[in-house]
Amino acid sequence: MTLRVAVLISGRGSNLQALIDACAAENFPAEIVTVLSNVPDVYGLERAGDAGIATDVVDHKAFADREAFEMALQQKLIEADIEFVCLAGFMRILTDGFVARWQGRMINIHPSLLPAFKGLHVHEQALAAGVRFSGCTVHFVIPEMDAGQIITQGVVPVLGDDTPDTLAARILEAEHRCYPAALRLIAEGRVKIEGDGVRISDATAQENILINPDDSP
Ligand code: GRF
Image (tube, rainbow, N blue to C red):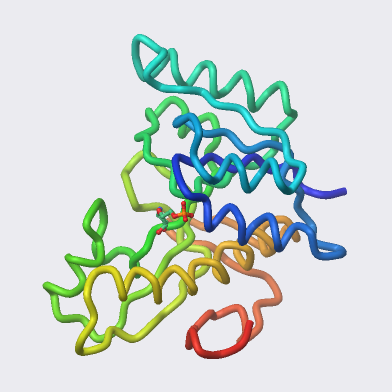
């Protein structure tokens, strides 16, 4: 039995691609059943189509308010019999009601080492703060934005001549490894939420992801 996953996107979908590739591997314990985008014609939808995955657009602009938009989204998730939701560059804030409905069953990826640098312009924030390392975080979604129990993190160095774009690109490589790793742990039933954190059963050193992006995957 594989975990039935929906991936929610708003754009280019490189993390979606990483999840698609991971799910294609033999014995991966999750399958992407549907990809939903709130923005029409984004590249992520094409990636899903190329992989033979069902897609749908739920355009938030077509709805009177957030609740109506989320009701349509929820409907799609129910229709596809979805058990678990991965947000992958999904650029809409979700209401507490929607988040509550998917509590413990919805994760997100953020391009910083949370709890540092929440919100937007993350790489600018990291460079301005002068940190020597940054990275990405896969976490459960809770009502507070860019918070929630952390599942995996990937760490990359910040280099002296980094711009927000070069740092973002380095972190993106880490993202593409951390997101499938987190989904695998969850789909294997090895992640248990305990208060503000998670306990991962049978954790190995490998799952404490410290990434040197030059390493081969
Ligand atoms: C990623 O950097 C992710 O961490 C953030 O939005 C970006 C999405 O990129 N939440 P992509 O659409 O997966 O390429």
